[in-house]
Length: 262
Length: 277
Image 1 (tube, chains in turn cyan, brown):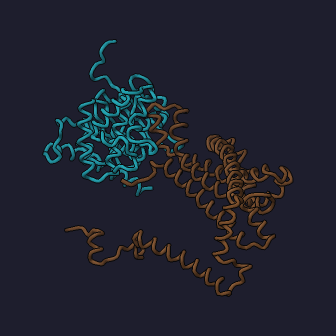
Image 2 (cartoon, chains in turn purple, cyan):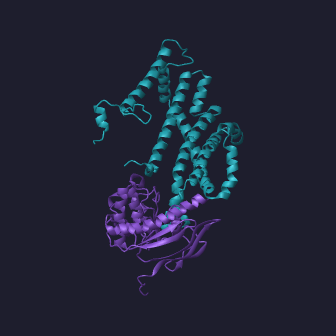
Image 3 (spheres, rainbow over the protein chains, first blue to last red):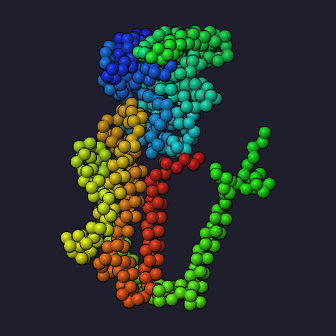
């Protein structure tokens, strides 16, 4: 098997549309994400950013266009695309360890190998001592760290994150962003991260995809080549922030105008 | 600024209050009140009978009830009647559980099965199971079988309805999470759907047990030759109100213990629901 070229698009989206009956959720989406890239989707509510993520995950079927992951058309959810949900993603009836071991166990991993996996990934999110707790006994931030560990322990080639830190307080959020960057640098998975926080997108992403409403579409893609770890108070950070903010403001005022017209 | 803790408040003589402003008691204060209320009731009972304010043929004195407890314990009749009742309730309950849980699972996971069965269930459900006792006696005879059948019938509905309801509480995010981890339909059924419905099945079982117990007593009062209901009814023919009181008290204690046991099992099975840190 020949080595894959470095910039091979791992997610290939061309002219993607999703409609529910009359309602057009997404239209004319074209986006390529290369292996190991970190992409953030950002936009006002109703722009279809979660729908786009769900389409990549295979929960939502495309009604037009092409959506391929690793050169195969997406036809449903699969373990090659791990996902971290905003809330309630963990199985409350399983312990932390059982949650993390769930995917590998389905693949037939048992015994010492299974324990090694859960130890490694719980260690990565600094929760190795909490393996026997139940999710209900953990704080929101700890739960999301377990959810990240669970998704990674299943060794997906792509990690999809749907506003994973949206329900957390600002300080926990910053802390988890730091941890996620460290994990991403260590594991180098392709990440698609949905957020409604510009600062979060600027801190995390290689590219920020700004989406607009009516119908959900891509308005702009902002490259962010800042080296990591990024300084949230640096001038460069604010430059990228302003660029994203400018596009987003435009999108939101247009959406507001639409509302007023209707 | 320093936070006011419970200890601070107690030192300053400030009483803890709940959301609506009522004073919160310590657990010692609460047990003290509970003891006072029970001792008070027993004293009132004793005074009413000892002073002759109440006719002791209708309201036996507590001493007489204790005496009849001693007698029934010594001659073994109490243990025999308790054993007969307990066996009936457990048999009926287990039969109901074995029938209702799979049926509830079937109804919960198949819209067709649910559409077929639900109208019948809704038709039968409002009928108190006690109303069918005479019919069950005609069909199954006056022996053990008819009691077990009617108890199973009574316990069946709460278990079935709760099991079915549990399937409506499955969180789509849990199903999706399992799918992204590689779960197939059978895995999702076993690890997500059944697990989500399980707390409801457990609650249904507890409600079913309460109903089984009510039906048991009714069936034994109507027709039986042993059991706690029989003990009460037999005492009525002999005008032994002390034995009636004994029977009622035994039913109360037995019901309390059965419920307590099930609550204990419930909290063990559903340990993951507790949110304490």
